[in-house]
Length: 198
Image (tube, rainbow, N blue to C red; front, side, top):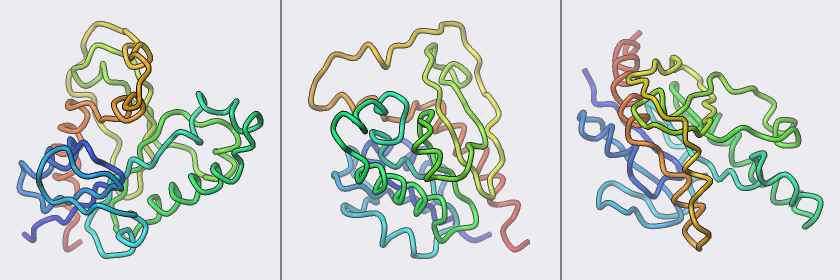
């Protein structure tokens, strides 16, 4: 069986990349920032990379202009052009050159939904994967099955919104929970391998 070639788009934390790499996947991350963990990382604009041939793409495009929490600034700061750019990047990830695609983002406001033109396939929570907190995470899936919860735990704290202000706050809030990354790797590798050569 050939080795799976995976792109993790818009990831500097390397959490998802490393979760797949430890299972023998040829996993690459790409982000405008350097990778926190040394490994297979392309630093720069992900858009040209999306058109290369991949077996799978998991993308975390920036959500600042797309998510509910930022909707008020669109009018107040006239950020409509930024919204259009963010939606275009999101759709580029969603239609990357791969048969198996997952794009992750928070719940979107209506202006973003009008531009994305596709509802999320699934909404997951960290507490379904071993982390006792809430953070609704939407997944848009193409050629991949929904994730099955692996470790439902008590605790419904909204910790991510309690992070203190700072220049790294948005970056830290966007890091994928390890339990979710592990579930992606364990469940989606099996699915991709089962469809190879089909």
